[in-house]
Length: 362
Picture (tube, helix red, strand yellow):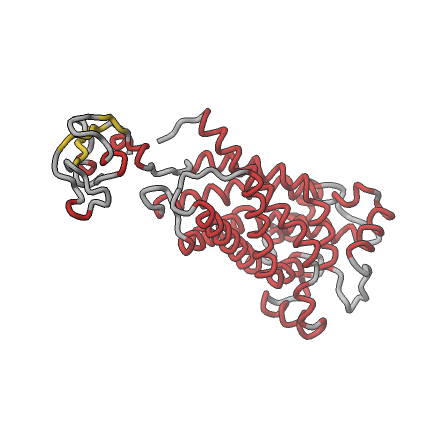
């Protein structure tokens, strides 16, 4: 790519667009690359532009490839670092909503239910455990959120970079496929064990005598009793959930970004615009896959032994609690995810900008 960034000059000669030139050059002009420019960038490939056509006869100017549009890519290393930073900050802000959502999803009608709604869940939690109770399980999610976001954005950039056009633009369909790949990667490498431990910690707090004294003690007990498989409960549901999550989010985000930028792929997006688009993408993923999230949560809870498989879990929920049970926790999840995705995309984009200034890559 570096060879394409070398300067080239414009001089009189036959226009590479011929009669199709929209400027009707008089006399016609053509770009001539400097010595050393790759053969693929020679005259006739770069074509004519208004900037060239407006030149007076006999006058020369030096242009760079960046002046005519440049392929803008994010190095996967930058994506991993920026994603990790964004994930760590985001989870510290939004964890209480994740706690309430998980409690409501674990609250089964047959038991009978303990909570009457979001406010009641918050009230009883603070009453029994204080404000710190709303952050029970934060450590497991914090330890996981940093690598989760790092894997997500790193994988997305790794998959999407070869699919972008000459100006670095990614079309909507390809963004969906890249998002799906990023979601599956983060589910297998990070999310499944992290989410299993988080759900067990939160569920453990509901019991009269909690067993887990902290993150490392809890992990040690889970592995001792159930082996490493104990941290991979609900792996199928998790892969389905994360894959669809990121496919939807990146598809919506890319669609909105392409719509906003239009024909100018280098138009800068204000952080507020990025936040609004991120929240919209988050909301779309919530309404699109909350049933999978409910199934995943049940498969990872302390009562997971009751279900023979992901399909059996879905069947039992439908039979015992009705179809509405698949949307338990939607409101707190909606609040958390919209805030989550908005924060992550804003921080990610801003950190990448800083890294671009400090870390030069091709």
